Length: 194
Image (cartoon, rainbow, N blue to C red; front, side, top):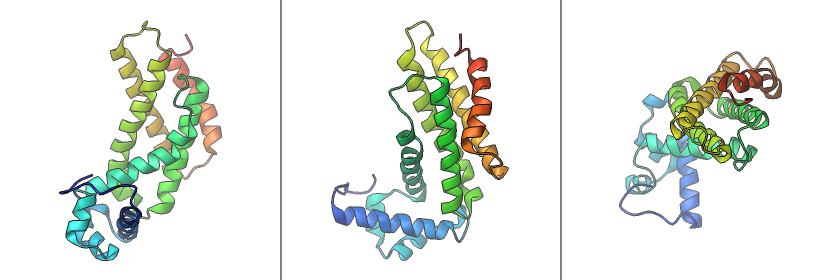
């Protein structure tokens, strides 16, 4: 959180204000490209003053980051067992949850393509951390940490790219069918089956 002070995140007034800001942000995302939205646009729609906005967010980029992190937690982290190992089933769950994330984003944001590059960077970074944690949880030290980090990068970027393309191609198969079809290739290509 930014600003002169950090509002108490459990205070109902703070929760309500953050919701007003996020609602105003989504309103504008559905009307125009992200690059055209200003903090003033958001403040006016949320009916808050400048100081209140900046007490919660440094700028519209931090606001977007907050919204993306929350959505990732809701659509991805709550759908997988983060204590599990990196298995075929876990990768399938990640593919399915990322498909659901893209689908939800399309429904919530009409100008999705204007924020897609920011989504990509954010999602890949969060996904990479999750995959690395899963890989490290089953590592017995046989693979160096740098190798596991490269594995996490490769898998997270593959999963993101795959689900993004699925979304662009108008979701011609279910997320489960997609996961079932492609995860075995990921498993073989990474040496996870060895």
